[in-house]
Amino acid sequence: MINSITKLIKPKQMVFAHCDLPCGVYDPAQAKIEAQSVKACMEKYAASSDADFKSRAVAIKEERSELVKHHLWVLWTDYFKPNHFESYPQLHSLFNEATKLAGAGGSKGTNDVAVADKLIGKIDEIAEIFWATKK
Image 1 (cartoon, one colour):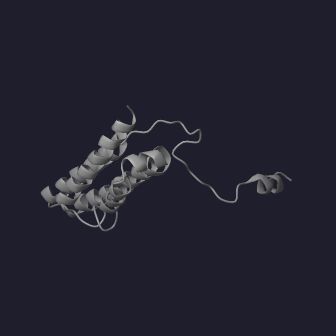
Image 2: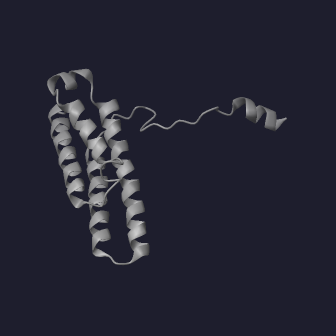
């Protein structure tokens, strides 16, 4: 009896959101912290000769790269509104470039610190616009 009730009310698909309220709390610092972690993992990878350590560094770097993308997407899709994109027409390009730099063609696909520096630079550009919109 309980099993059949559970089957009836169990959701068919689980979804996750940044915030269910929405909370209205947004900050590009979340993406930047993860990007700095990506860079640190790359630097530690380059400085080590231990294969196990290097493998862990890559796994963590890729996980953090995915978190960078997540935090950027939340800003792009939830915080920024049409009027922001009108005022800052480069915003879509900045997000596109930043998320690609955090993806397979960027920090997930390389251990080149220069890529992480470019990613951090794009996040800084987004942050500058973000804080200008908060005034």
